[in-house]
Amino acid sequence: MARGGGVTRRDFLHGAAAVPLVWSAARTAERDVKIERVEVSAARYPMRGYFKFFTGARGSHGRAAVFVKVTASDGSVGWGQSVPIAKWSDETLETATIALQDYFGPAVVGRDPTDIAGAHEAMDAAVAGGFSTGMPIARAGLDLALHDLAGKLTGRSLAEMWGRARGGPLTLSWTVNARTLDEADAVMAEGRTRGYRHFNIKVAPDVVFDVELAKRVRRGAPEAFLWADANGGYEPQTALKAAPALADAGVNVLESPIKPNRISGYQALKKQGALPILMDEGVVSPVELEEFIRLGMLDGVAMKPSRCGGLASAKQQIEMLENRGLMWLGSGLTDPDISLAATLGLFGAFGLAKPAALNGPQFLTADVLAKPLKVADGAAEAPDGPGLGVEVDEQKVRELVARTRAGDSGKADEPRRGG
Ligand SMILES: [Mg+2]
Image 1 (cartoon, rainbow, N blue to C red):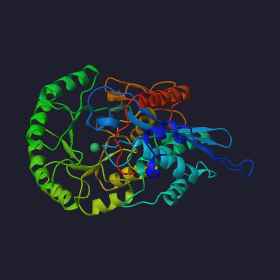
Image 2: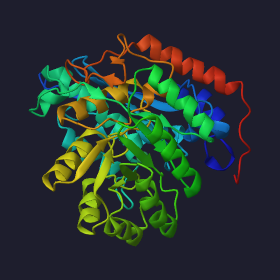
Image 3: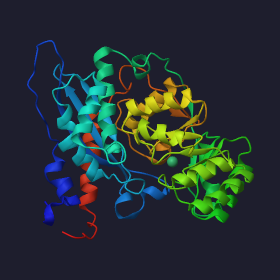
Image 4: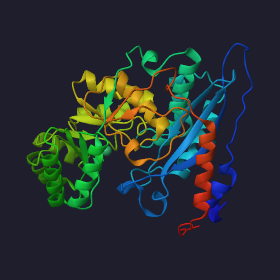
């Protein structure tokens, strides 16, 4: 352990956290299936291309993911994946791993694996919420694993568990995170080569550049659904100038123009009405979504189960938005295969119509599935079959975890602060 009781990355990857921790639960009644153990392992998926969230000393090591394997007392297994991005929100590979290992995992051991609502109550008791759900990205990994396990135990897919049709295939949107206009052309060209026809652009804080970028992408893709995401990067007054300018440049929707705690700013943007205003960061549980709707802050939400504690919360939010006649778009956190499978299952079951900004297949170069997800020509199929509908190749997981440890041990730790 590090001085001061913290955990350094080296400790984390080579010490206790490197060995999956296992909790055992006494079996109760013979026929009752219980969650017997929760195993957690940390890895980084190798990446290609430039994406601002995966830069810097740690981000550039790859896309962080915490694998969650839940084993039931009858030997059935469910897999999930937590996908923190330090530069996107306040959860990291290290915090998510510890939260799952030491808090969320033990909270669900011994429980009925099909009681997902009960599992969330147990997780609420283990890590209290501040403004909203506590450590939602970490928690999503366990929520996904429980959906996978519950589906496998009952022989039902996600859609079947929800009494819906599988849906899909889902059209995908290619992410253009360009630092220059020439780079935007090159990134777009690559997307086209891979069969993509719809684009989402990363904007803010420079409105002048953003408008030029939007015009450039619109000119190159006149028929595309063009979606701009500022990731909270404008100041409120700047966002009020950006929204009409981006609309004139051909943008269809504006996501996260300002930070989610700028409530009056969102109200002003919605009232301005230059573009449909979507929120992403800041909408974690259905409770604040209800409040934000009531406060007139948004026209819709960029949904992603990985952000909001998993499928249970995301499904409830989609239903809430649909009941209010509000928009929901499909988005993600550069999800690797397991998280992507869950997301596609959700979006397919709820009939997502607009192109989904699911850019895992664009940026990630590894997978851990026995059979890869079907992604081709800018579209993805919602997986079929029990649970998340995918089979995890555990050997591939072990190799990715080992490669992550080897890669990290070859790089210098960042300077430590405090302690
Ligand atoms: Mg977003």
